[in-house]
Length: 628
Ligand SMILES: Nc1ncnc2c1ncn2[C@@H]1O[C@H](COP(=O)(O)OP(=O)(O)OP(=O)(O)O)[C@@H](O)[C@H]1O
Image (cartoon, rainbow, N blue to C red; front, side):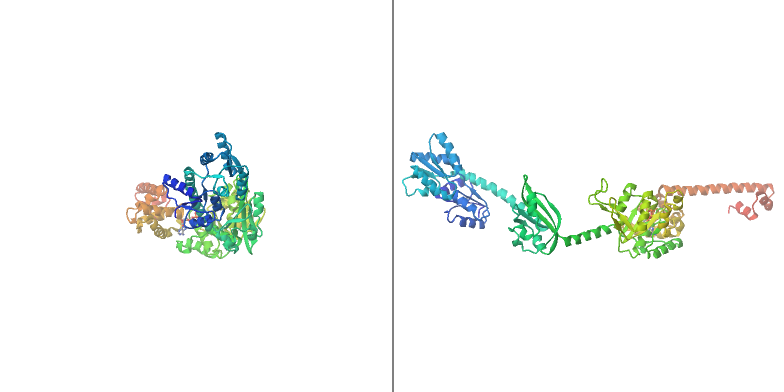
């Protein structure tokens, strides 16, 4: 079926419509319909796929007033149509009359003025008034009646002549053009509606829209699912029949939204948002969105869980810890034992010795291992931010505070462990606050008066000399003793040089996948070099040197030369200094030897005599002469 159909009430219009189609090149079906069958035929066309109907006069208005859903375009009576008809009427008689709507009569008036002739006019507003309108014209003794079909029919039995008022070809072309642009608009509208429907169907929230009288015009599937009401019992019903507690009418009346209201409907607890729909300052409906409270709470718990544990998990197990030297094994043994209790631990050791690794282990092997592990580097966060990071804050606590407030790290560590690295960097005020947290087991968010009880284990770490800091009053003694209930001193790498080959192998295995090179290991000379170095940056520095050596090495076995390059400036300086020291030592030894030989010469080679003069034993003298 064509997208446009013309339903014409009279033969004359059928002919005009055919002419219009010929002129425009349009292939539009044209059907002649009587008023009685107009709606039935229009519906048939709709079912067959027509998107628009063009018709005229009473037939047109009857179709558009029916329950048909496609639009009806009326063929207009233009001024030109009127003029043509009036001229024709004056050729048939002298007293011309017309009964029609105010709009048509207005057109007649302007033609009367330009023709300088009078036409009898009666205004008709409804179909029921047609008979009376024509009767009045007859009383005024007209001899010609201008009118559409229904008017002309009224004077059939009289002597009055009739001229049919009908639309010309231009009017039909105008209607066809209007119908075509309406189709474009309607298609765009349909695709927009489909898109909106897809969105509404997809979202999990229930959405209900009502008109200005509170009648439901739109709702999505979750509405019937959440409230357990069939979809077809929702559209077209007053909102209060669905929502006993609805505030929507109030929202429409006041134009004010109502947000986050908890209410119960059909035995289901829901949280609703109701907002007015406005257009040019007037409210013409409202939208209500809602969610099931239980579902929302479940989702919130999930999110909280994810947030809490994201990045707050331990990374290390005993299997990842390398070291066999007695000093190191001693420290590891302490980790095993301390992980079983809840007391605060203070980890000390130089930078890069593995304090954080130890803190992870203490948590991973404790009964809190299912809870979060929150690591805070007190030196990495600016002092002015650290307090709000640790304690959190409430909405509007300070300028720049995030809307909705923020959970502090202490709270995030609830039922888990908080690792306060570089604790020696805490300023005085935070030291006092931390002491309170440790003593009371509770925190208070910034800007809040409520205390939040927390269950956390604290592990602190530092590479600072606490004795010196306390002496200089830079660290509170009471806090130090509160933290240092259990202590673990992690040895520096230089104190366990025996572990260096093991660590090198471990790092080569760990780094091979990312570097993508088959490296066998370090040769003996390289290992000796690595074991001689002082490692101020400890394991972290060693790991870096291993990584660089793996990248730089021309062979699959890393040589001492590569290590020297990979070690960087510090390493090179150290090696140079060591070499320099050895040279100086050699010079000194030679100088000593020359001096001893000179003394010996003076005493004619008498070693006992020479040893006496020099104040050394005979064996030492012998050793020094032989450079042993
Ligand atoms: N025993 C170990 N076995 C294997 N790798 C280790 C070991 N100890 C430390 N590491 C590695 O050494 C690096 C430094 O460790 P970590 O960050 O724990 O040191 P730290 O003492 O906390 O340093 P800082 O004082 O600078 O914070 C990390 O890459 C870690 O994986």
